[in-house]
Length: 131
Image (cartoon, rainbow, N blue to C red; front, side, top):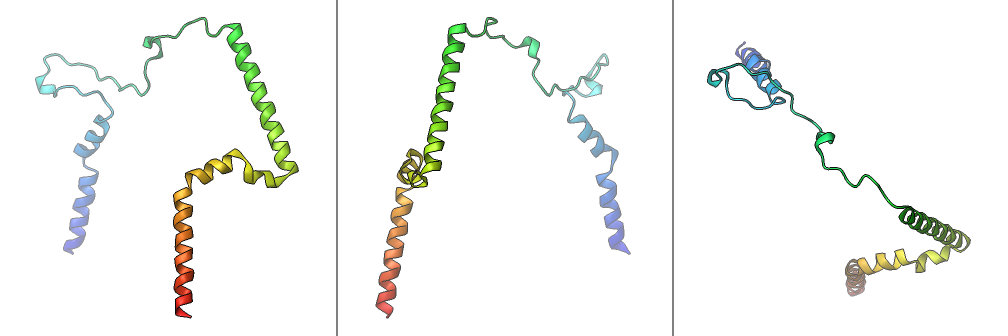
């Protein structure tokens, strides 16, 4: 059976030592071929992450107390406003229609809404012409 021999050759090629060695060597740093080297060199693994010790450091002092206080109070105020807004929306769900997020969405989707309206109008006119 000649077709099984071809499959066996394909399997042999996939598991050949040359292909496996090439795959394994891709994770190592490129060095010239052994024939070109006068002295043997040891292989080193490629680094997957940067060396943190060699990276430039930011200011060691961090933020001042005033900055931390201002950021903390701004965050507390934002959380309080979000809580009040969610309470209002829970009390009256119709407020969702006039919320800034809905208004922004409508302003971004104006063209889509216009095309949809024109398509529906043309569909109704075509239907009336047929009946």
